[in-house]
Image (cartoon, rainbow, N blue to C red; front, side, top):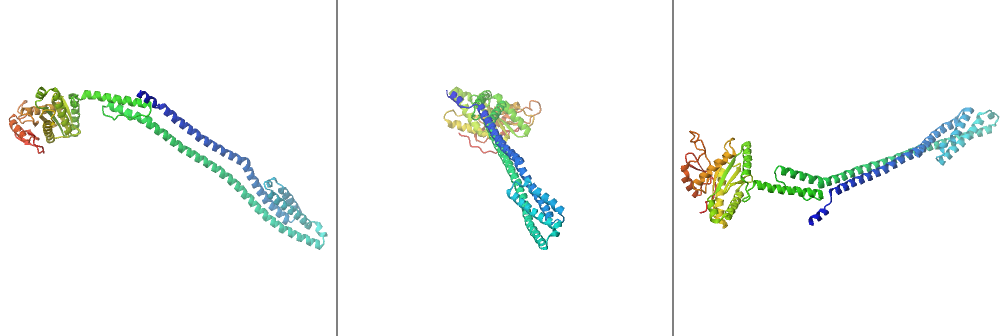
Length: 486
């Protein structure tokens, strides 16, 4: 029932996908809606500008132009030298004064019409002075007309200045209208750009959020499962997959972890000795071949050690097989505690074991082997649960690029045999004799007449680094080892 509850409590991955898709669609729709509204507002401003503002600007421009024309025609009326020129320009000024272009401003329309009334009075006065009627006037009447003409000319100068200022004001108003409209359109377009930029930025954030969730809850578990399956295929270890939030990925995780555990168990069953936990003979040979190939490739040192528990049959016969099993378990545990990280131990059968020591030369291998020998003798004596035992060890190292695993094992086994033949509880390094006159003499041997000296030296606790030479001289490698327990 708990598994069923967990199954129902875990959401399905499709809910995550639907949620993320809905979020993306909703955000895009909102962003497009805002941009569309602002774009329509901008279009409305442009249309308003075309329908209302541009005609108003054109009216201002025409009004300013007509004022300029009115000034020129007024000058011809006020200062013209012929009646025909005065009448013609007065008529043109009348037409300009009543143009619709002045209707946008009552103040402008009033000023223009006042200026026209002044021009009409000037026209009448000057026509009288320039016509034949002037000859019939008295000197006083003529002088009054001339004085009136001068007064009207002064007033026209004032009106002309007023018209000029009005013209500048109209041009300025038109420019202001145009600038304000352009600023409004530009401001709206800027708001559209800001909204679009903000929308794009938020869209990127939403996409990042969606991508993060997909990577965290979907892609990462799949990558981890794929890596775990690859590691299982390559027979390399992998950490258990982490807890998955969604049901489908949780199912994959459980299946991969279960497969990994099963394959680990099968691998251990196929490669490990069930009693001691050491690698079995077949897997030991495979690992030894890999270590030897690496040593040949890197031109590095490699040592192989054969180890055998002395008189182990007596342990089984005297104490029973259960104690014998415990003895092997403890002995291999103590040995593993002495080995470097890249070394390994294999059980070849019964009480016989083998060690592979990468990067160990003869001196180092013999020293380590003797430390193992002393440790097992001491710990078994002090344990109180197993009988006191000793071990014998034979050591061989890689000497040439043609060495093979079987050959090294055979030679280490011969050194082990010699250690047992020499009284057990000692370490022997395999050496090749110089007696090579024929094929038999060329085989690997150990000089037999040195056994007594080896044994006596071991009893003195000084055999941690010794090996036998062809002349039968015992050579001691310098090492620091404790005296064996009595």
